[in-house]
Image 1 (cartoon, one colour):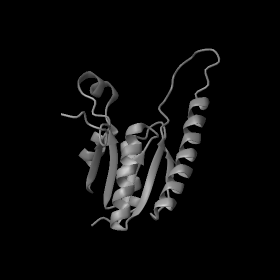
Image 2 (cartoon, rainbow, N blue to C red):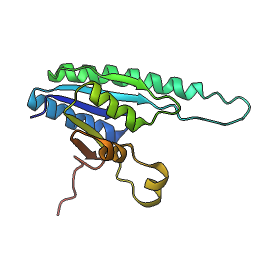
Image 3 (cartoon, rainbow, N blue to C red):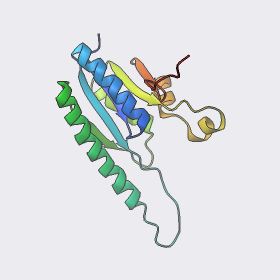
Image 4 (cartoon, helix red, strand yellow):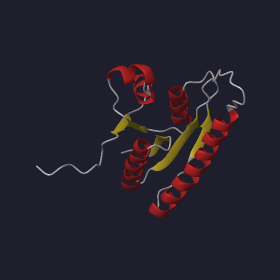
Length: 155
């Protein structure tokens, strides 16, 4: 059914669940998988003595490298073809736009993302990359909730 799957990852527990779901789907369909990590460079305007925003950026770049290696190894162990990719957002770039552009460039026929399921004020303040992707996508989007796969209490 799906032949090219892009899964957005950020190192969180929720995105790891999305990666696991995308991996299983790719394996069962013989699809090519691309885990995709975006280094977010939100503008930081702190004028505090000793503040250096490059420390955070460098750590995010390193996290992207670590995840790329980890996911590549997992995919190889599972016999799933594909290559993880890392991209960097400019201070003006929206992560959802970058994810959708990467999906288009990869010719993905499915986008998989994790969602935290925030509501109310948290959702208003934090926004949702997944929600923006769903609203703007021209391809199917599979959302994996953070609670997916958790053991349920016995009845």
